[in-house]
Image (cartoon, rainbow, N blue to C red; front, side, top):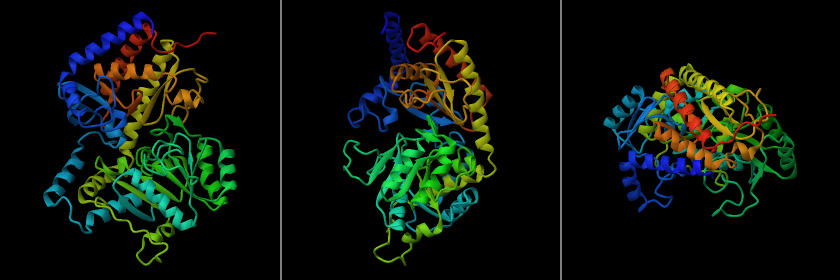
Length: 453
């Protein structure tokens, strides 16, 4: 770190501390309770700390110190309609007045399921749960009973939750098992070698690519080939649409690229901002949930929060707005304007980096292999470690703090999650902050310069 870079980092931290005293005070309290450096989510761990929020509406949120942010965390991707959408808030408020939890069946769960099935043709059956991770766990159980096999095949860097069987083999605290195999993403030959070498119940992959809809983009031909390859070896294919479901199109990523999985898992957007998960798919795969199933095949799926009335109210209200694709188009258009103009800015400033992604835009800082990539589905580099951000992690950390200090909140530093609530004014304001931040960091030599030949 050169002296100018160090001085700039010190000044930035001091400025942040002065303008976030209330958040820092709360963070000191939080550290006494929460093991992850005072945070309750890995993405909220930060030095000095993330802001502590009091309220949010539309594309904005405010913290305890009165600071206002254009928000690109959007409930970790759950809020494609924006914060506190009136239709969703009204539905939740009305349902709360009628009852929080009946412990019984109710009509809202049916209406919500009908909306999901209208948008996702593979949803012949729907099983609700409390989170996207739970949906992935249920998909694995269903596939194992249906096929009579145990092994699961997953793709490297794809995220399906933190629980046993969903993380990469060898993750700390997980049981060492041969039941989970990991192969490189975008390597069809590696997938086939694995499938031909052992019997797998399920092949599981993220829609849109790894890490929040494509920080590490998936090759479309690769993903389209996965269900056919899986079926050749008697394996079911599940696409994890916890992030992409109803975000990229009314029918999710599968509709966008034209792929038909056996199962799909949902979360985030399907709940309209409240906790929810669901697994959907072919009816026959769900037979093991029917009480008429034989004892050796019966899956007893209990869960206190399965299809609870509040989540159903929020989910049904939100899904009714997804049907015609308007929110998805609005989010994608704002993201496109930001991405395209941001990329021109990076080129003009001579910074080695690019923005890519559809309604979730990822900032990549590192060597540029190509400038003619399709930013909707591709990235400017095929170097997975570079795209994952490991090569320039320090720059990402400073970038995130610069943006927060200037009133822009992103997820994990370089992730801009757009919603239908983000308008042209938000895009212009964010571009101005981006330009100011990049100029400062470029002057300090804390971000990579574009090589010249």
